[in-house]
Image 1 (spheres, rainbow, N blue to C red):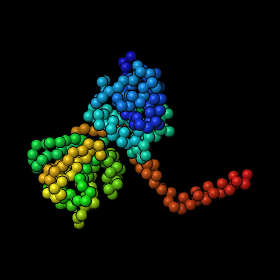
Image 2 (tube, rainbow, N blue to C red):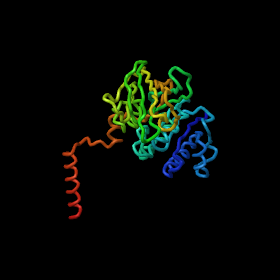
Image 3 (cartoon, rainbow, N blue to C red):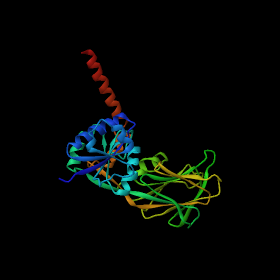
Image 4 (spheres, helix red, strand yellow):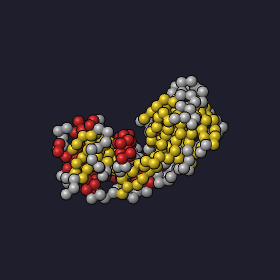
Length: 316
């Protein structure tokens, strides 16, 4: 029988994540799987799982894996995605964080995960990613490049000074902003940094780019939803002289100097997320943000019923 391989991302500084990963690995090894774990997390598992079923890796696994299972929050999923996305591996997250929009399962729902992995009982959906390039001057050579799953943000480097930027869309100037920064987001990232910056929530199966100015001092400074074929160009102007910082997913960064140019467009890479259910995105929104779908009247009725039940219990 052909040996099967999966890789894992683990928030190894959280006992809950390590415990869940150990249980998952032990059960999966019984089915003949080999589990690949990054070196930092591998050390945390030492002595707790069968050594013959677990292998450490640095950079990328040493075998073709069929799935990446992540135990942690969205930050842990993004860390795993840094090596999983370029390799085309699907990622399935078990949420041990707070909101966990990228995660598919909560820990209470993970009891049948081993069976689903063994039976390949999951579907894979593809999400749009971004490609970003930095040039020292317009039309010059690329001096830094990366990709992003959630967002690319150009932000001020100093708290006391805004940056001056000129934003082009598809080669046409849109607006000049004095701002704390400019963010270009995917639909996946619309519930992350872009959401905090008052951007709209985009359904993840929508092909689009989202541009959100960050506290821009301008008459026109509204979020923009663009075609997925659009290219966003952000030119740093001369003010302030210290420049700014370019971030991808809040994890990879580089300095940006006055007169540098940043271009952002759709990437050829895709985030492949494994899903175990057909849960509509609106249900995920309600659950993750704990939205009050019953309104205040419904809540009052539930509170009254709860008080009545408590009074009856006290009488008994």
